[in-house]
Image 1 (cartoon, rainbow, N blue to C red):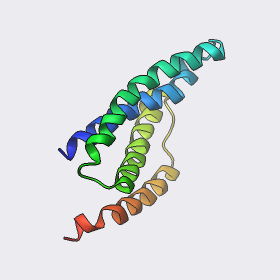
Image 2: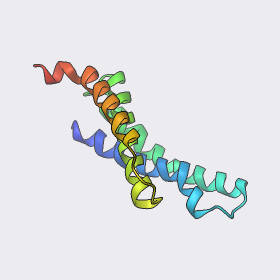
Image 3: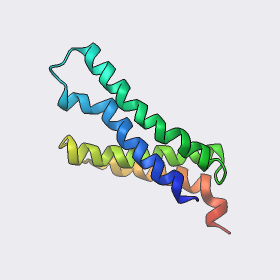
Image 4: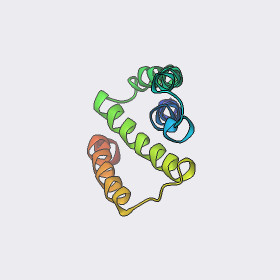
Length: 115
């Protein structure tokens, strides 16, 4: 049951990341209003996954744990999106940000780690 919210959050982040940034590659020539409506439609599917993920996750994780988990998964999905879809280069800044997120995860989940 603890894995279900993680999988749902990863999937929701894929939709969210594309809704937020995919238009920069795919819809550059479209009018802004069209892009907003398209992104809004894509974000609907993100919410269809994110809301159940948090509802299910709240039975196993605290609210702060869910938030930190969401941020970590967001950065992982975003890094993959940048490299694989947008053809951006990963820099050392991603490494430093990852260390900060790892620290956040440690503090949120340390009671599970240190048992």
